[in-house]
Image 1 (cartoon, rainbow, N blue to C red):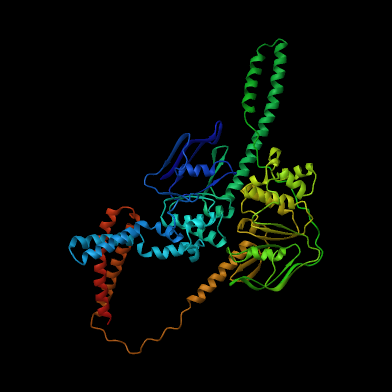
Image 2 (image 1 turned 30 degrees about the vertical axis):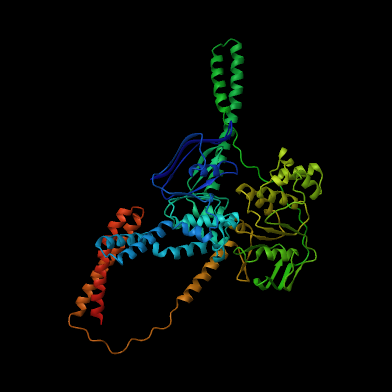
Length: 625
């Protein structure tokens, strides 16, 4: 069944410049689709059109009737003074209204026990159970914990949260509302690794439809089943996850380039032949003019195809200073706390030349603080930390600031990067800043552009120890690939904090996991580390599952009545049949969760089966005494 249908969609914000220019695609029920394309291609505009926030100029947009759609990038306006808990509870508003009605019916039944009231209460109770009312508190805690919405955050006013925190709360609210179609616009941007993995597992179990815009390539690989790339306002389709998309896109590009080169060779051949025929025609063979004109028409058609273009690769490399010695960093028994909050205690670590280490862990565990200790921006409460004598370090922070926010990129490169104007322009061009772009004030740059500019400046220094704090956090996929190209050639020591598992897997040869105040040091890549962690969790669960030895049953056996065994076996078969009927009924209730009348009918059937099962249990208990 088609749940989303978009046909020949056109949308422009400026006259003559269509962001979406004839976009068409269909999404079937239950599909998980990745929406790809460079920044500015219209991905978020498409989502806002689907959600009804934006209108469109031409085309058709159809959402299947009765399907509830939720957009993660939209933050609803809530009443003043609402806490995060109020926002989360509001998603269960229908259930709370049903619970209030049940309470009112109970109060009425204290004065009037008429059959009509009893039946209405039974129907309401059955609907409350079918909609998950008895488990909603448990579900709310489960989802909040998974998305790192702490008890302290749940007590805060919603308006006091940061943009990222509001996004997490809104995502939780959409999950509670049992939305049929989820539109996720960069859902992992403000999640740590644990919360991202929780979200992935949730989406893999989610029975509805998912459309996701994301720069998290690992997330796309795990979650999406096919990809739609928006290119020049139109859709290109790829029937697989992100890795499939990368390979198939390159294959299509190579094929188009090969065809273009064949067309160019054919144009050259036909041009020569047409010229020769015109010459022969002037020499008396007039009929050859006609053939020459036909060739020129064919040439015109071949010339209509443009040369396929690909993203320009970043042509930049780090200057590197050879490291002399063995140890880049030694830390012994370092501890750090802020007031009563202790981040870590007695950490010991050694980093050697040429190693590539990913520092990972949940938000708030102290990763950025550990980097500040290494950089000398803060001092440990105890222990010592020392860098090798020949170390020349460079640092890319998570939030990039410049000394003069009104200065242009060119000025910043010239004065802070200490280079001439032409060299500054060449280095900026290598990072995608070309032409008039270099005169843009740094105050007008996005987070990703600021990180790119700072990285461009770092590349001009002689360094042998590069420290990065969430280097890909604000970058689109093309910019992430540019950064990876630069890091590929950096052979010195690399330490980086990241939630980008694609980056971690590509570069890390060692994982430092910071959690519960301690550091786990694993030598290997991210996939190996994840497999090791899974084995550790499995072993822990097995240990917890071990039960104490069962007490031996008394030697003396109870005497049973004659033929009790046959009666008991028959009774157990009846119990099993009744339980199966109840399970089937539960499945039918879930399938009709939005049909109140149907739920009332099913509730009456459930009541009858519950009474039968209770009577059977009583008989079974009597036979076992």
